[in-house]
Amino acid sequence: MRIVAATGLLAALALTACNPSIPEEAHAATAPETASAEKVEAHVRFLADDLLEGREAGTRGYDIAALYVAEQFRAYGLQPGGDDDSFMQEVPLFRYQLDQSAPQSLTVTEGANLPLELGSDYLISASSQVEQGVIEAPGVFVGYGFIAPDGSRNDFEGVDLNGKIAVIFRDAPSDLNTEERAHYSSTSYQRLSEAGAVGVVTLYHPVAQERYSFERRAAMDRMGRASMTWVDADGNAHSSASNLRAGATMSIEGAKKLIEAAGRDYDTLVKETVTGTEPFELGLTLRIEANSTHEEITSPNVAAILPGTDETLAGEYVVLSAHLDHEGVKPSFNPNEDTLFNGAMDNASGTSALLEVARLLSLDPPKRSVVFVAVTAEEKGLVGSDYYARFPTVPAEGVVANVNLDMPIMTYEFEDVVAFGTERSSLYEPVKAAVEGAGLTLSPDPNPDLGLFTRSDHYSWVKQGVPATYLVPGHANGGAEAQAKFLPEDYHRPSDEADQLNFNALARFAAVKADIARSVANMEERPSWNEGDFFGDMFAGEGE
Ligand SMILES: [Zn+2]
Image: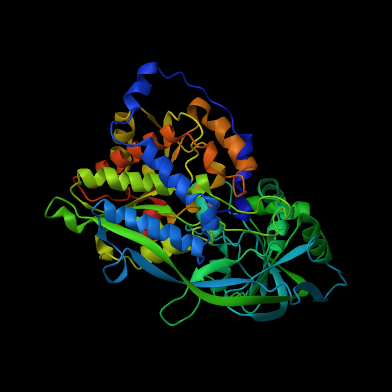
């Protein structure tokens, strides 16, 4: 699971508990005949061991994990699904990070005398596009940078962003469906870039502050967190907002100063932006200096193919994914304590379930072919899955669905499953049937405000027009409490270790996932988006 500043997982602390009474027989019905707790435990204990050093993309620890996964696939008799008849698809990665030894600053050079302090008023973002970036340009406030598809709201109305520095709140209107809101929020920089902006200043919003505070983000920055993207065929770092050459993020305190210097009131602006924004020129010239280091590396996605048994349907592929990478070792994180991020739950558990699903399906293959892919660099921004979804190792037009596993919290006996996004496509019925067939309940998204639909790897396939779903255990039978404990205490921390997992639960989860995969891979009709679905229309075009 990937951290996004505007929608941190910590809001899950506010979860409400639910304890539906499920009869004892339900437990019995879900006990898997075939999924092995010992096998998933062995996978998790290997992948989350200190010897693998946190499996950060581009490191030796990750490469050992990738080799392990590949050789398990081989042991199950799967076909290589990577480059040149191997199990590895090498992903050309571009690593960029702030150069801590070089100057970083945000200043107001014209229109006001406003001293701003790095670390408390603002943070500078690393750039994938330029190493030494200095942008000096007038600032223009454009709300959420949102344009409604029906034309009812346009945050850019009447202002010219060309060559300017955009100033925004990174969110989208709250009256949108939460998944669509998350989509618009995550694509706001792209719209700024398309409108000609050359820089961006993102203002912290009170809601964002509550979810993933500026201070926590500042602490991450001090640790020197690297970002990644992939390198395109022309050798350029891929970016959906390549016009933006520099960026800064302001704390609420810093934002208040800036907005006041522009003759406006921050709190009023926060309120007004909800319903619609009158964009305005700040009357201030801003200067952002950002120095980044760039490095090209490679890291593999691990892919394997199980050929389908039906002559016609074997040309269609259901892609099952789980990210294999995690956060590595961070020497500056609690320097006197454990600094190795084992990532047992995130996502050794999902990868181990994927391996067990591969083993189970290989014993009795479904009609369609299945691609198993353990992706790299999810923690760097869904990079490995984006690369695989764009450049699949099987014919792209044959990829019909994606089912993703990321950070199933496996510390309790789950009794329900959440399948993000299924209600948007014909995947809903087969998924529901498989979940209920296992004696479990299919529950709706318990935390719609977190926008999880855009925060894990399945979204990479959604963006290619492929119906997708992302499976996690639900809130019933202690799930809400388990999540409320795990997220603040262990999520993206060195304490995410193997000992806390319930391996029986993980085996049951793998069994359900295998049922779901089989159910989807045996669907009579090719999976399709529902008529008029937002994501189907946006990425797959009409009539898909
Ligand atoms: Zn994560």
